[in-house]
Image: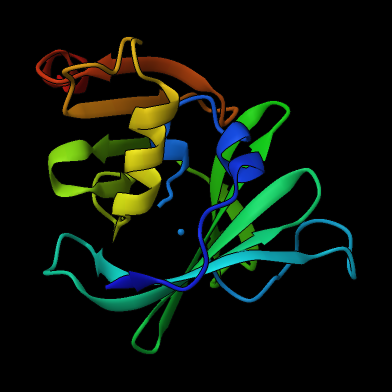
Amino acid sequence: MHQVASCPSPLRRRFPWPPAAVLPLAVLAVLASGAPGHSQALYKLETKCSLGGAAAVPCTVEAIDEGDATLYRHTIGSVVETVRITDKPVTMSRWDEASRSWKQMRQAEARFSTNTVCFDQRRLCVVNPNYLNSVREDRAGSNLDGRDLVMVHFGTDGRVDASCYDDACALILK
């Protein structure tokens, strides 16, 4: 695994918590978001991804700046999953090809020990050590110190309504 281009710091500033990186962590052809013609490729990452909890396989993640949102196009074999993250307010959604619309995500997480960012209870996961290491560096001396798992839950409006760390996440999932 290697990164073709590094994740620029303006992208990292777009997300107030690690999983929104998600990355990650992560998205399809620039389909129905942002102003046409105003797209800008931010980086392309060759890494590993998984779908539905399956084993991770090689994939490509492209990050695309769409003005008020960043799209993450995950190409996993013949499957393409796109995640859209907005910053005002912070929301996450997934392109649903069947309905040809964006669907709000319910949950996202980052696990530092595996360098993995996952969305909607492992529906889509991406390995992104460069991003998660940069999060650790940018947030040194914060509430991330000594933490392995960071998870957020999104309300029906797509905005963060709960966040947790490590063992406390099991309490929130009950």
